[in-house]
Image (cartoon, rainbow, N blue to C red):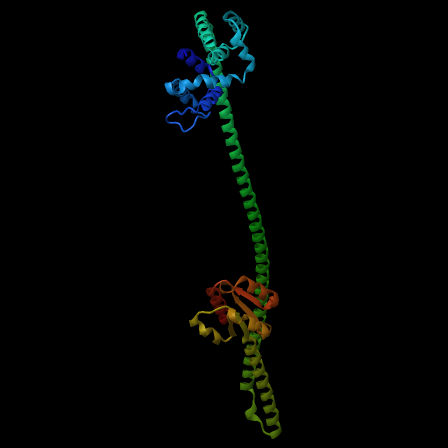
Length: 364
């Protein structure tokens, strides 16, 4: 068996055919677990051919190639043709590597000798070189096509991964938009409620200021009346009374005027002493608030609110004051629904409550 011929035949085989032949021969290449068609095969090919041509594997080559050529039965007839006929077939377009492989793989010595003779003639005529150039060009073209396919596959894979990322991003954006819309709606609702509450509180404050002003004017009138009565009594000529009847009349007038003055003062005091239900925890040092001249304050903590509703403490109170910083929003909403708007007042801080009480004291 001519190794030069066989090496040329192996060199001319396509990658897939060479891999199939090596697997049939059970060839093992050092450094490679198995022979597969991948991006490393270009590096593996020379070593694979060298291994096949080694003394251990070479004896299997003819038999394995013969089995391989049985798959191309129409070429087997070439074994019975003369060299001149074979040259004519090749000139008409038949693959010289296939014709030589059919002859070299035969078990008959005459076929193998015919293969060597044909190989020499083709080599001398330059037809082998022409065929080699053609094979190299095809392999180069196939390699370029394979690179394009691999690049296309890689781009397709990257595109699919990018599509998945875009889809996930779009899903996240949609979810964030939903959350944003919900938060925006909640904010708008809270803002609307706050504006309504603010308007209600401003209206309450305005109404309270008007009532306080009316009370202050009435108290001023009562104070003037008391002064007038006092001056009248001082200027009354009771010491000039000469008869019991005149004394009785004067005494009756004095008693009536005194009673009227006392009633006015009592009314004044009653106006000042308003019953206040203060909802929220006060500092421990604020007990002095319970002794203000104008208000009687009953402090109700969050734990006492349920009892206060049951005992109608809010309905019985003249006013309900709420410390915003200590009362949950749910309880404040319930108070706003249950307590009449004209007797409901909220404070955002303890300092605000102190200022309000201080203003109330100065107004007395």
